[in-house]
Amino acid sequence: MNIFPLIKYSYLQRVRNYNFLITLCASLAVAYTFVPAPDANYSTIRIADYVGDYNSAWFGYVTAIMSSLFLSLIGFYLINGGIKTDIQTKVGQIIASTKVTNRTYLFSKVISGFLILLTILGIVLAMSITLFHFYNHNFPFEIFQFIKPYVIITIPTLFFIAVLAVVFEVFFRKYTILQNIGFFFLFSFLMLSSRTHEEHFSFDMLGTQIVMHKMENQVRELTKGEKIKELSIGYVIGNKKTTKKFHFNGIEFPYSFVISRILWITLGALLIFLTTGFFHRFSLKESSVQKAPKVSFKTEITTKEIHISGLSKLTTNFSILPLLKTELLLLIRKEKKWLWFVNGIGMLLLALLPLEIAHQFVLPILWFLQVSRISGLTTKEFTNKVHYFAFASYKPLQRLLISQLSASSILLLFLAIPLLARLILTSNFLALSSIILGGIFIVFLAAVFGIVTKGKKLFEVVFFMITYTNINKIPFTDYFGALSQGNFLPVKLTICILVLGTIVYSIRNYQLKTS
Image (tube, rainbow, N blue to C red; front, side, top):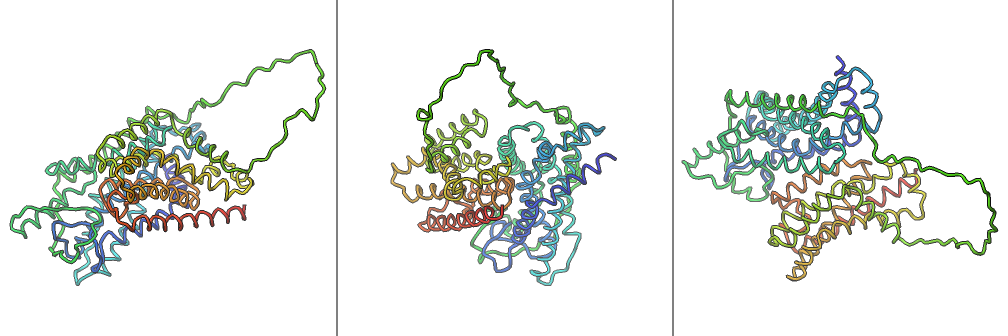
């Protein structure tokens, strides 16, 4: 019975967070796009030139697949950090002094995170049912066609994501960057493995391939056995006028697949059971605590005449350069030193790999590795409880805020120097300006999310989604000119930077007046 109060506490703590409200609103906005409007210029699930009729089965299965992908992307970053929060609030030390076992505590974190994802999933389901009635073309409403794919496909996936969030936090407690990067590559591997095991759907953790396989076979029958040249899950813009319709009535999941979904849940529970032996139970050793230096007292007291004229004169320096230097040092020293070895490898790859690969794949990954550094750009004063001191400094907007934005921009552009040099040598100034403006754009985006939410998590979620979609060559999220090097891209980036800068300046100015 000890687990239920822990689940309730953790769940309410997350739900009452301002970040959760913002994420919920963002999820509603994204869920609205899962099934395009009849006159929309994009598609989400498309087999060759075919999309399904807007019946209950198509709405239910499409939104279940998109929810499995979308909530897997953001779910880890949304619910990760529960143990860290208990450490910071000292609740963990209280729990450690009770009879609550490690297994009970970790399972409570998994279940509370799972309930958070289920809450968002319930909102998405309600949105999909609402849209069905708006887009309906005289098809009957069948609630079972909505519930069935959500239960079999999406729910086991979300439970396993909740397990991964706790497991990663136990093993990489001190290294938030490893948690972010580790899940990024693990999710990419799971996506790749699900595509390569077309006939072994039990290995598909996301549970989406069996439905796509059924849709592909149905379209193949309509095209009389022709090879399907294109099968896409995600946002594909354009060519909507050439789409054809086919009638999709759902699928009968084989027993082997249903059992595999149960086994994925069992595997998650087993992972938590094995992880309990590595949990620190809040017995943390602070390595940063230093021994007090020994003070030796001399018995002889000597007096020396002090001449005021010989003392150093007090000078006032209102330059921004000392602040800029300090902010740069804070960014450089924030993570472990060996991470700079990884950054060095990334810079080397920017210099050696073919220009297109370096621009499209290496650069966004290298910048994403800095997510922990720039996500706290405008929140570290509140995290370290020095915001009153920082706000009382001389011209905090013109000096402190600008130095923070400038230092982060310099860091990202420094990492991109090998690529920038190659673009200069090839006289590709359009791509050069796009990369420079793209780095500044990401910094300003981090500042806006941080200053609005007073936290890092929402930006980490958004930055992960942007990076993942860029690697998958989706032009809509291309912010550094790797996929769409149009002449208008630098103009759009400049406008976005000015808008974001105005938001940051206005909100920080309001905080200064009210603090």
